[in-house]
Image 1 (cartoon, rainbow, N blue to C red):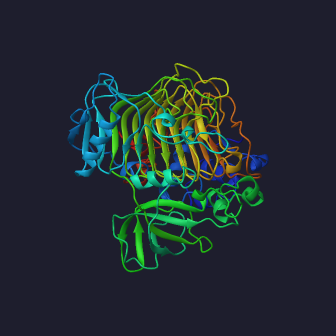
Image 2: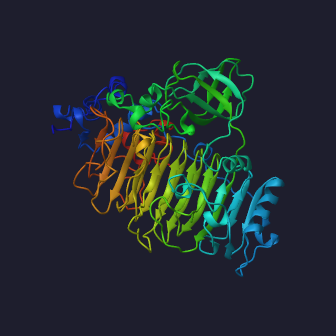
Image 3: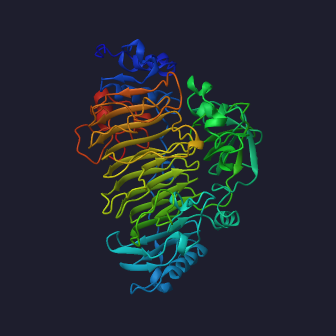
Length: 591
């Protein structure tokens, strides 16, 4: 490859003219790649390209063609979750540490707190036996232990036994990928799932249409609406966009690369395509919860986040009431320990699960460990949830972390997947860090994985990031063949250390459209080992393979550089410009 020493100034042409991988490489490194690269990812050996790429993002943070906008991931758009006061103890409601079943006492304590204005329900040190789930049905309620070493919730029964079976016609158990022993979900959402035998929708129970929205472009925050009279600053609403049968919206979410035109959407992605006969009802519309930041007049409002995709006349869009939900709730400082039972065959799991966030927003889990699980931590249509200092351990899991069914803008940080004490048995699978189902804006960062991989589980997740992670890459990617493409546009894998030389599913520039893979270290090759969904030029970028990028994530391993690809996608976007070296040395979130 030609020398990359000459680095031009950033230009708008370089920023927005990424019509091909060759253009992307020229914009970042100043050199054109060989002609044969048109069918594959562009490779830049210039580690300074990482800094240039983020300088480009800084100039247009919501509309860069390759870099995702994950600048507002997590609770309250990236804020630190609060620490509300204690209002009750589970022991006041009959919970005991002598082996007595305390499930009813826990649920009674949480109900009391929820019906009396919220606050912390404290779980004193000890091991508590529970025979069924703890339901977090109320906003503003936090379940808090003393520490995850001293407060243990021992669940003796799976969700199959302690709640109810949840089987598909195929015999697969839905508890393999959703549901929790601690479950954040509104009582209305739970009741609707039960009435539908868990075979219907899993997401928001949307209310009234509040306003129709005019056409707008990705990155735009100020919108023209039909009538703003039912909207107020601070409202959490759902922007709902129709998913037409021509798959135009789906092609757009995949970056509109040439291969999206020739891809046979109805046949290869029936679960996503309207009119295919196999569409999941969840995917009939694209649903993105977002706050209204300001109402300027009868026709003009501003959202708290930039749009992640265009709104076009052929995809009618509107703002709707979010419906019943839970917010400002959390779980902290404890361990969820499932009874140690053998892991079953793939997708037949009975529900030895951890924490599930379903159709809720602005919640959190902090300093929580899950043992012996099928699913450790799950997002199902969740918005703006932060998981921090969380861990999965014990025997092998199916999904350590799952982010599915249009979950948006969640943050998982300072996490660990421990070495399993019982390995994955024959006929079972461990995935790792899951993203799937039109989910966007999510970030996994600053983690260590002794098990698993970067599991992108089909159904077109787009605009997500996994960064500053050390991984022994031994897991598997999954997803139904009927769910369509593995990747939508603008997936970022940034500063990843692989300890066993396996690049599988982590170096993704050969399969993920309009993606960036930056500074994957510890591998010889750069192939993903995955089958491509889209033919032709993917317009993706591979920067600095095997090298530490100039702009990196603060990983679980030691490193010499200090800047981060963070959930705020670099505070570069909001900080005053400093001299060049200073920006790259200090602009880390959390420093």
